[in-house]
Length: 74
Image (cartoon, rainbow, N blue to C red; front, top):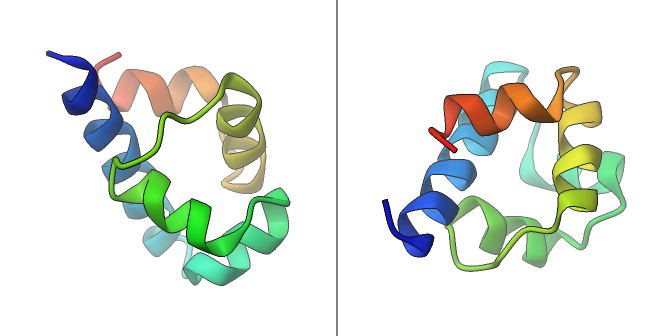
């Protein structure tokens, strides 16, 4: 998988987990301290997400960062 594929896969996992938990994109952004528009770009695979943001997102989604990455195939 190329870089764009990984980013898209991570974004899809974040979005699916967020929706499963009934959170809006804005609510997840608030929980993580990440700007909502930036969160949207992460979910669409348009932004390279940092390790720190993966940790923040995982904490807000009540899972481990490794779980998100494993689901994304990384």
